[in-house]
Each structure stands twice: as structure tokens, then as C-alpha cells.
Length: 344
Image 1 (cartoon, helix red, strand yellow):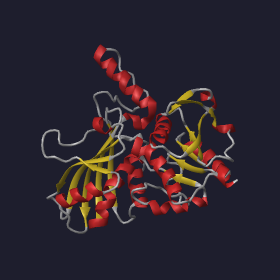
Image 2: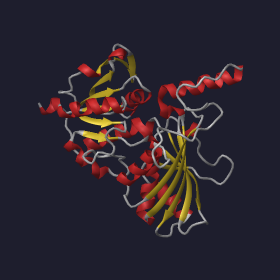
Image 3: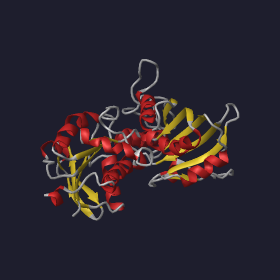
Image 4: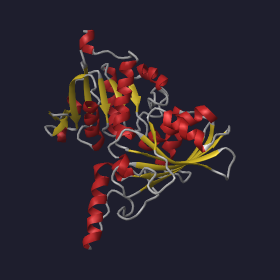
């Protein structure tokens, strides 16, 4: 007997990717339900070779559903996740609504799988921010080897992180530039076509943005609260794939060669690091893949025990949909959840 799975926010970029990944990975689901807001009811979405008609999240009965993969935004999650959890359905939420709740585990399966046991307090598990997910996958094995003291991250984040509207804006602005039409701005604070914007999410009192704060807070929660993290988050004119330039200071010595070998063996990581033209990964190559790619691993001579590296991943997959499905797989592998229909 398989599981009954709901995907809330099924018409969005991440929701559609969740459906793709469930099918790709052969997730043990007997039934998959696509959910969204009332205005999307009846819309058709693909699940493998099947077509699902979207149902209304607000009126759906979760009492016989085992897992809800949710990517419907923070406000929707705050309203519905507790109600869904109260019906005995485990919510794996992609928004930021629950990431900093002490009673909700924040999980990347390659990094802190043991923390998933805490889901029973609210029946909610949080998916991290897209840029944090790929970062901690790369940091975890290095932290175990040499104990990370400080991380400086500069992100190069694709427009798909801002949803379909972000992708549409890059496309329409690029076309407008080529045909000499007026460049209209709706989603982003400045023109994104042929430009970069050092501003993602809202500004905070200390001058950092919420996106930068998320990277710091989530890395500490999942990896180690003692690690010092500082981040500058930048939106770039790339459709899919987040990149990060990462500078790491360790407590203990570690060479670039040692780091390269450790990362080659680490779960979820794929090292592409040749010191030659094209011997590194860019977002174009990472799009559509599950791995967190690591390139440009080299020692930093300006600090003791320092390394630099380049980290790239598909933000719609490992940064969102894939990680959520992996969390669901983790629950099943650990025997923490069984199908309700079977239990009945």
C-alpha cells in the first residue's frame, strides 16, 4: 500500500517541479492530489504521463492524506499548515513561515537527518531557503573535517527564485532591450535584464536584507550555531540556478586537495574542478540536475586555514522541490510515517 500525497501550490514553479520529481524518483504514492487557490481550480497540471485537475486547498479534507508538500507562500502556510497537521497529515513546507519555529525541524537530509524526528510536535517540517540548502550541503562534510569558524557568502541568484513573475520579467525586459521598446519594471526594484541587483527580500534594521539574514539563521540552525556567517545576496539575469562564491575560515588546517576529496565522497555533492578553461560549473549546466556542484576549490592565503569555492545548484530542485521530496523519503525510510489507509 502506497501513500496519498497532496501538493499545495501545484500551479507554481516549485509545485510543478514537486510533481515532476515525485514521478521521476518513483515515490511510493498510490494517489497524488494537486491543490491550489480557488481561482486555479480545474487547471490541469502534469504528473508523469497523467494529468491532474487542481482542487481547492481551502475545502480539501486532509484526514486520509499522509503528506502535504506545500509551496503556496508564507501567508497561506501560516493559515493552513497547522490545520493540515491537526488532521494527521505531515506538512513539508517550502516557505519561510515555519523555519525559525523551535518546534518545527528545518531539514536538509544530507546535513541534519536526525532532526526530522521532532516533526511530531506540530506535524510540520520546514524546507530551507533555496540559497541556504545548497550552501549547507557543501559546508557539512568540511565542517566535520576541520570545524568551520566563519563563512562569507556572496550569492548570484536566478530570477526563478522570485517565481514565474521574475522569469517573465527577465524575458520581457530582455526582448524590450533588443527591439528598443520601453523596459518596464514590475517584480524587481531595478531593471534585471543585463543588470545585477544587490537586493533580495526586504531590508532590515542593520542594513542587511531578509534573504541575507535567512542564510545566516538557517545555517546556524541546521549546521552549528557557533559558526559566524555573513552574506550578500544578489539577483542576476539567469533564469534557473543559484550560484555562490563561498569563503570559509576553519579552526583546523585543511588543504584544497583534502577538501576536494572530502566533497567528492559527500552525499549530494558533485565536484567539477579542473583548473582550465571551462573546468567549472555554471547555472546553465546545473539546471535540471539534482546535485550541488562545487568548483574553483582553492586555498585562501589571506587567512589561516581558509578556503574559497564556487557552489551552484538548481534552486527549483535542491533549493526547493527536490529537498521537500527527499524529506518525505526520509520520513518513510526511518519508519516515522505509514500510509493511513494501510493503518486503517
